[in-house]
Amino acid sequence: MSGNAHLRADLAAIAEMIPSGARVLDVGCGDGVLLEYLVRTKNVDGRGIELSQQNVNACVARGLAVVQGDADTDLAEYPEQVFDFVILSQTIQATEKPSQVLAQLLRIGRHVAISLPNFGHWRVRLALLAGGRMPRTQALDYSWYDTPNIHLCTLADFVDLARSQGAAIDRALTLKDDQVSGDIRPGAWGPNLLAQGAIFLLRKK
Amino acid sequence: MTETANPRFLRPVSAPSAETGKAVNFGVDKPLKLDCGRTLSPFSVAYMTYGALNEAKSNAVLICHALTGDQFVASDHPLTGKPGWWTRMVGPGKPIDTDRFFVICANVIGGCMGTTGPADNDPATGKPFALNFPLVTVRDMVRAQAMLLDALHIDCLFAVIGGSMGGMQALQWAASYPNRVRAVMPIACAARHSAQNIAFHEVGRQAIMADPDWKGGDYQAHGTRPSKGLAVARMAAHITYLSEMALQRKFGRNLQNREALSFQFEPDFQIESYLHHQGATFVDRFDANSYLYITRAMDYFDLAEDYAGHLADAFRNSPNRFCIISFTSDWLFPTAENKRIAHALNAVAAKVSFVEIKSDKGHDAFLLDEPEMFDTVRGFLSAVAAAEGVA
Image (cartoon, rainbow over all chains, first blue to last red; front, top):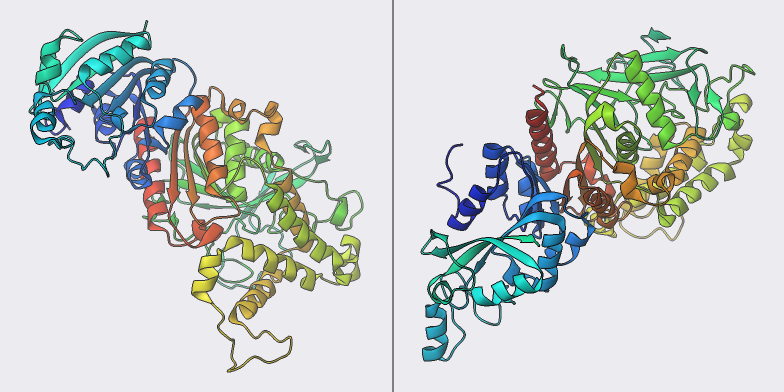
């Protein structure tokens, strides 16, 4: 396998941040597409946690070291700073307790790469303002009553949470129409209005 | 230390086509030091192998058998003539591929298929050990396996794989000899035997001991066999290997060879005659005292106990790659117990995969046709072989 054209844009951006041979934990690794890419092309020591047993079984059958588990409860069992990189892609908004999950990620990983959708995007704001109903977007295409995304936030909200957890934001990239931007200034108002999502690289200060 | 072609079996080998395996006889210079403080010497380990050892000796896979299993994992049983107990899993092109791996399976210490056990003669008396046989543990079984590997000049296993009590041995391997194995695959097992499991074993043992033909364990000297007690033990245990759902699906309340209830204590129901059959066929191939000893070894198994109650410490700095498999309907070694092992491994950042497979077949699922299990075993072994550079 060469290149990363088949990876989702945010995953490709995360993959680029990770050096060869790193010890990586992908929390909510899904069907293992990123993990497999990292193992094959970057020779990482990769592990995964995934909630769906069906996904876990598929990952293990493909030779990935994945355990069935829940980000909300099962991160506590890992020792401190044991991974070079911990990845949480498009998952934090679906956790029960995002602040505790983030605290655990910063505890067990020296670097934490998080991608998340931006609920502050202008279309979302406009949909609520003009339509008066909970917005449905391409990235968040659920009715309010059956969405797994129970803790949506804006990029500005997330930056506040990260800072309150004592995290340094080493990098911030925005996502727009499946394109990843260059680094932006965390907390700037522009991306919070214009980006559909973002990728943050954090570490405990 | 000598190697012999024909291990000593309890009864004459009857199946004409069966391979009877090999045995290594450890002389008095190679005693087996047991956890109970006693030593066993001389002793024999009977085993079977499948496939070929490569030049680098890097492709050896040890398969550990369960309570009533034996070394005939992929070949006909010499007493019953029936196919090996894991032919779905082990063989050419199978998930544990004997075209690729050199598979070793040894009868456990205390067993009755050629490895020294209570039915063998005590060299001190010239009579069967019976209850003078020392209590053995899962760790003792693993020690004997390590001595077998020494005798076969194999330093490091590619993998150790086992279900149920075989899984306990796999875990013990990871704890005792982390540098003599790469991949560790415990299936449908636990790091400790639960109170409920000890309870079921005790029912079985009491059934054997309550049989007047058991004669305080000296049935060989008396020319008797506690077949009824052993059959009842097997019947009770067999229920724990299945699931309520599987029993209902397979038997329901169906009657056996009759149109109506007999109003007697004949086996009216199909499930009754099924259990009778399980009991009756079991006593033909298994020694009652072996059953006592091996169930006791499982009862004593609590891996965390050797590490001051911290299971994770059993795997600290482990270089091994683990793959744990459980089955949804297994109530003997439920998912929670298997997950406990995975959690302990996570706590020391060991390389671990954990898979729970949906099945209604209960504990016995690991012996049956479970495609998801086969995919998991195949995928895991291939990935480890690629990572470790084993062809």
